[in-house]
Image 1 (cartoon, rainbow, N blue to C red):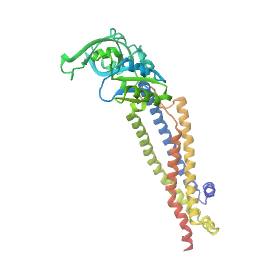
Image 2: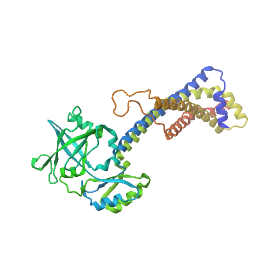
Image 3: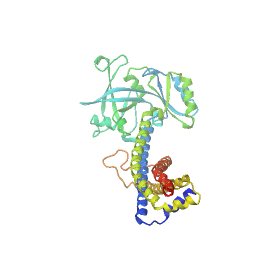
Image 4: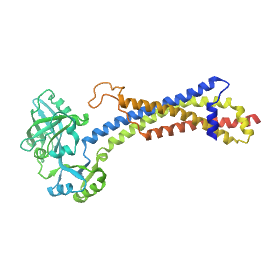
Amino acid sequence: MHFLFAWRYFRGKYSFQAIQFIAWVSVFAIAIGTAALLTILSVSNGFSEIVNGLYSDFYADLRVVPTTSKFAQLSQAQLNAVRQIPGVHYATGIVENKAILVHDENQTVVFVKGVDSNYIHINKVNQYLKRGVFEVGSLDSPKLVLGVGVEENLLLFNTDLGASMELIAVGRSGKSLKSMDQLNHLLAVQSGAFSVQQEFDVQYVFTSNQFAQYLFDLDTNQFSGIELSIDLAKEKTIAEGIQNILGTNFLVQNKYQQNADLYKIMQIEKWIIFAILALIMVVASFNLVGALTMLVLEKQKDIHVLHAMGATTGTIQKIFLSLSIVMSLTGALIGGLIASCLILLQGQFHFIQLQGVSFVIDYYPVKAVWTDYFAVIGLVVTIAIVAGWVPAKKAAGRIFEKIG
């Protein structure tokens, strides 16, 4: 009943056209705020999805690392046992460590990652090749797949593939790069170049795990960990199986756990955006307070008639609170439709372009998420209740003013 009265008041005629005009200005202020909020949140979702996709392609489904040291002993029997767990598609031992990569007079610090030939089934970096092929070679014929940022640092981007370069790394007994007798110097040739994301492109170099073991003076059964491609539906069972095989000295991480800080930061950024735009909508709601106050003054006679018919002060207050909610939800509906149309058009036609150069996309990505719509509706209803509280209370108080 309260919403029926509220709807009739909202749609009814007023003695002053300015009151109706101000009411609709308030509605459109809410609509514009809602449209802006949903659109910007969808853009944030779009960028998050792209970043998540890039990180997801670069990281394995599961990663197993030692908890107490950089390298750990992993026997062939242990690796085979991990591979035999139901749901494991591929599993390979990896070797990771820093080294210096030198070509002619140029050098840069890189993060060497030793893998085997099955690694293309675990990591999708081969899908991001800019030139060449993803070949890591062998111990006798080592090859390197460089990030394009590493190529740029070494001024290799204009040279043909197959360029020979030197890797300099600290041996197992070495403490630093300062003592030359503790350094290993090995030659390898470039087989390809990839571009996934700047963070990876400027530091990663892929080679064979056997060559990496030799470079860092490791035994053939020493690895930095294991990376796996798995059936994600069996993730928990597989993780428990790995833990049973390798023991508590190893940590099993899924994709989220490998990048927990990144995912948390992206979520925090999104809700900071939501909070800032919510403040803008709160400011826009001041128009709503003014419009409701004028509507209360306009409907004084109706208030007294309702009271004479038995309506209590609480009933009258609820009617005007409902009026505030009706006006706000009308604005939210209009804004939601505008935002949905913009998101649909941008998703289909990409008419709003990113400025500058992008390695991945050249337009603003968008993704509508139903939880954002519910969050915005909740915000609008909250604003409506807060904004309508004082005018509604004033409307209820009009009864006693008349009696006095």
